[in-house]
Length: 494
Ligand code: SF4
Image (cartoon, rainbow, N blue to C red; front, side, top):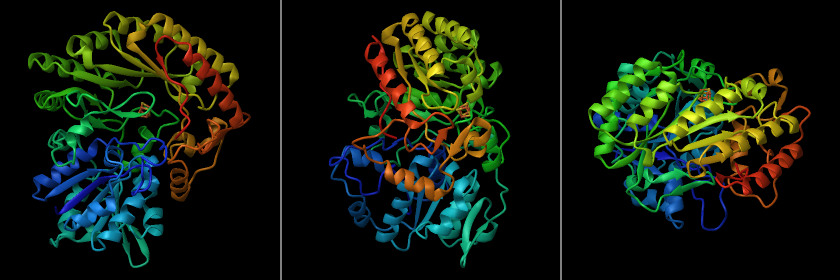
């Protein structure tokens, strides 16, 4: 192997999942990584991939250090630091790689990296390079540079690097286009250790599980990048992408290329494809073409889709006529039963329209996962009463065997509107720097004995102490217990 890619856990690189009870290790690889690794392979590099949290949970005695020591050292190691939950795990992974392979060049990338690149390079010598924003062209050039090619490191776009004791940002001049994304391979995962097992990981509502039947595999597929919304708790919204990756709204792949990828997945035995963005927000021409092509190709596969807002009736009808319902699920996030709290947080629909949309889902027997969000700004005892009422109404209206529901707490996302403008949302913010997130992740990797739900989330809503969140969580837990459908208690971990 010339290049190693590692997806880090939230926890330390030598975590022992058989000795303590972990919080989620977050085993899902950022969707864009598949395209990046396959691009490097197409360029001729020998790349291998390791999903560390998956290995650590599958084989509790797995030692990353021993595994590294058993391999001929790779010259370059790529570690994703896309979601803030990996701030500690990604750095600890780089530290472990450097301790076993001191000459390996370590590179990180992703949205969280893009936000904190200078601070990371200034304070973590185990990281050699960070890529800010889109990474295809920067990574292609950096690989050539590391392997001795005729490349000037100072001219590699989007690269953040050290020169002596200084950290420098190269020009931010590379931005992915839809055509470029269509040219990448977002499907092949044969470079990943235990790729079959990776496909069988799913979120159950109570945590990440590996399905017993390895034939029921799913795959997250890139269908574009960016977002056109600015939900205030999310670091992947329009403004965030604009600032961190120079993108204005969506960059979409073509429905033709996406349909072809889905056909490949079906042919490879996958039962479900999970879409990285919500096609219902792409415009009718895009999704009508996708669904028509899938039907023309006779590609029947389950689809997992997270609706950013509410889909139209026409979308639901086309979706149902195309997807294999036995392996389909859609997620929908009203956030709160209070319409004002929902609107303030970025979802723009009334309860009546939401319930009407569920009637449309019901007609086609579509399995749904409904997400509320317990600790968002604006949710108080008074509004929470409306959340319980709406949850109850959903439970009564929707068939129990097709319904899952969760009401988790959010942690402050470093690139979110909440983080940038806390005053605007009546909040006080505790996490601001990379060091804050590194310490948060390090302190919350394992289940504590006693914890108040809402604690260690990086923010407080003014006038709503953490113990109020815990009281609401206890009420939700009682509600959840009494429901005939799969209604999960508020998670205690992070
Ligand atoms: S949560 Fe909102 S801002 Fe974030 S990706 Fe989804 S729709 Fe976009």
